Image (tube, rainbow, N blue to C red; front, side, top):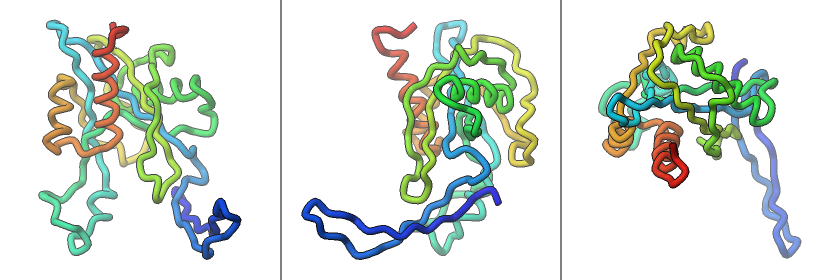
Length: 206
């Protein structure tokens, strides 16, 4: 009951007053959870001043079971079970406004990375729609500098989906290079890494 699949019947009303034939649009949403999500890239500076970002490799069974080889344009190089991403999570009903988004990003940093980040430390960098043809979900993009602090063992959210994840800091330039080489294939992660790089390169960056 996590996802709901909906079909709505539509007609386009054109500028000249005519109407298109009736057609249907199908999409999925989460009836018992929030509609949107937040992704947050946690970063720090190395002793030499280089920006490093936290990447998380975790389970994504959807990629293993939802991509049968006979239906692919070309076979995957390897069967997927894990994917490299930034920290992310679903916005719950109580996560309202920018304050709520920052609060959720703070909670996800603790659950998925074992790092304490105050909501006030979270900076928002816009949002993106990840798959607008089949889902109304948008993902808010956020970032926070965490410094060199010891991370606790991530608690997760209690779901087996979060078991066995691995977290590591890598130089931001190398993470973007991994996107260019196709080694990081998560869209929100690539967009967020590039927005962070642009922010830090700007005249007002710290």
